[in-house]
Length: 139
Image (cartoon, rainbow, N blue to C red):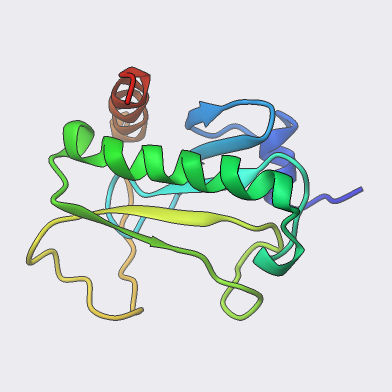
């Protein structure tokens, strides 16, 4: 049985600010975001890389990533998103995860050098709530 940090989050052993959960996918705020509102979307079944992702999880995983990307505009005023995943190299947790990062023109993100920031006290919960509210609106 896998014991990576994402499996612990999925199993409820570690606390996080979830913005989405169903039987196949969980999404939560990255605790060290590129920009505030940065979300990680993970399959609930332990899958290490994109190459290991079974076909029956492909659609649910990327549908949730798409919904979260869409919700970034009403939630945060984002002008776009950066959506990416690492496959082995630079994959900090050995559990497949899709990054969905809110973007605005001139935000300073250049290439793959991701500056990191921290949330102020209480700010992480506010960002999670705003995104949950935006996700609750039907497509």
